[in-house]
Image (cartoon, rainbow, N blue to C red):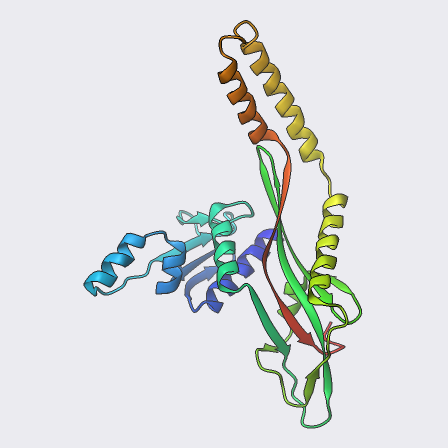
Length: 264
């Protein structure tokens, strides 16, 4: 399910940024990048600097992304994309840079009356569990700024609703009862509760591996601790950086969605 969500996110991300998907299957995408997206993703500033100086013809690269190795064509070469992969983190960073927040309205086709639209605050969040190993979780949360209801998988729900950046005729927006900063605080608390309820055996396992490697380190330096104290302390600190459990929470992007009462 996670890989399917990643595939869907990648497809929609590149289409939203005007990149042509030249080939797509259940386990892969081949994307023809625009000039702007090539500059963001392909890390070749000298090429673009040279073209700008000489007036050459730009040739943006294509990108092959594999989201399911078992479903992708045999022998296809490309970046395997999964939570924790460098390329996905890079795309998340570009997504944050290009679209920190959006405002969209449910598209309504009516010719009379006045239909109220309820404000929903959406946050797309990545939770990283890190030690000597790493696991990422992506969560999309929506908060109704009128009644405080919180919805999981909000992004997926929005895919089934017709949305537009312009408010439809004969509709009006309700003013939020919950302020934006307060709403963000509620969603952060919800995320913290999810983290608290999660299985943290990974952290205990990391501490156990840390203790074993520290015991080996202590044994290695047992007879030469005084003369090699600096080396010992450096290696001990390196073990701490490698194994110490930590949880990083980052907001990928977010937005305001104005929806009818029966949209969700």
